Length: 208
Ligand SMILES: NC(=O)c1ccc[n+]([C@@H]2O[C@H](COP(=O)([O-])OP(=O)(O)OC[C@H]3O[C@@H](n4cnc5c(N)ncnc54)[C@H](OP(=O)(O)O)[C@@H]3O)[C@@H](O)[C@H]2O)c1
Image 1 (cartoon, protein in one colour):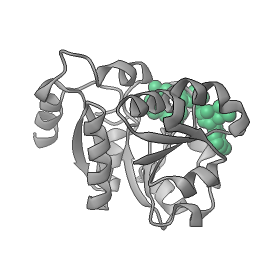
Image 2 (cartoon, rainbow, N blue to C red; image 1 turned 120 degrees about the horizontal axis):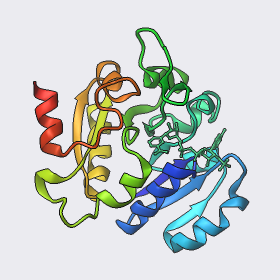
Image 3 (cartoon, rainbow, N blue to C red; image 1 turned 90 degrees about the horizontal axis):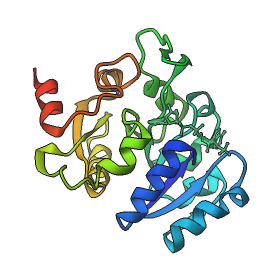
């Protein structure tokens, strides 16, 4: 499966490394252009390539947004992600540690407004990149001790596709519900943000 990753900074490059280690193919894009991604593509080998964002979206079966929240709007032509499973891993802050006040709306609902044809799933936004780098393959993390990655969205099949990738990476997918309510649980200021929970802890939390 070819996964596109837009944003190759701390979290995007980490996801690229663990996806390739798990046998996936990746196409990467950043702001400065594919020519700047030579070293990362060389490190990852034949499973990786670089492109401009809209090209990466066109090539990917699943696309992950790992750019600053304020870069999301207008980043891609809406047509480029029509019917694509689009994972929003961004977080909206107003300053260091200050969640942005979006009123009643979740940040991923705004992303869904900006890309109305995409099959939006909020996921991979809660875990720090240093944890993401190692926790999926840590030998002590098997079964219900696996760390949870959350999925929120209104397209159940799209969430299942994202859950499959989370499982491939050695984590446990945990469904938090629709994009509105689940997304708010996952975003900065919500109870699941930046809390490394095992699958068992996450399920206990969700069901209580
Ligand atoms: N850091 C984490 O542990 C973590 C964990 C979960 C989620 N997140 C979220 O993931 C996002 C990225 O965080 P980060 O820490 O990885 O940031 P970062 O290290 O600053 O990397 C940001 C990346 O986004 C790219 N970018 C910015 N504007 C772009 C545009 N218009 N088009 C294409 N690419 C663009 C940058 O491109 P250049 O390289 O060309 O500058 C860079 O590769 C944020 O929304 C953050 O909240 C971060």
